[in-house]
Amino acid sequence: MLPLFIIFSGLLLSVVASARAEFDLVLRGGRVIDGMGNPARFADVAIKDGRIAAIGRELGAAKSVVDCAGLVVAPGFIDVHTHAENIDELPLAENFARMGVTTLVLGNCGSSA
Image (cartoon, rainbow, N blue to C red; front, side):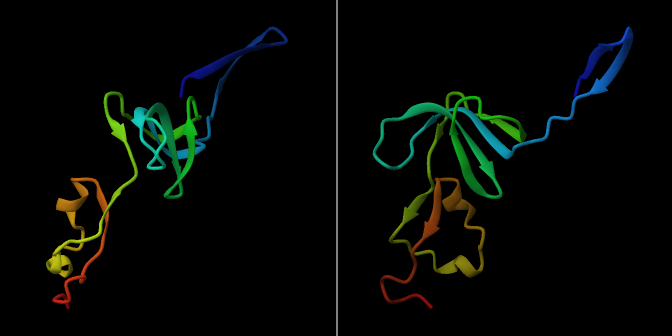
């Protein structure tokens, strides 16, 4: 933080302003698609305690900020029919996460454990 200089009764005081982070993370300036059928719009998405806390512009301070200019910010996709029977061996499912899939439905063919 940069110091803030204040003149008080002829004295020059230096105060470090402590901006408290309102959010844990802000995804700034991305093209937001909310998954509700609304048109895409440019906005910031603020995250607090693992949940979306606000969507808009100039939302406030955050512990971390990600510049999403030129990127799409969207909810995770649900894969309703997958054959990820090896999920026990690869519990992070990183191959799905790289494609934007955040929820898997398994066992719908009857052959899963």
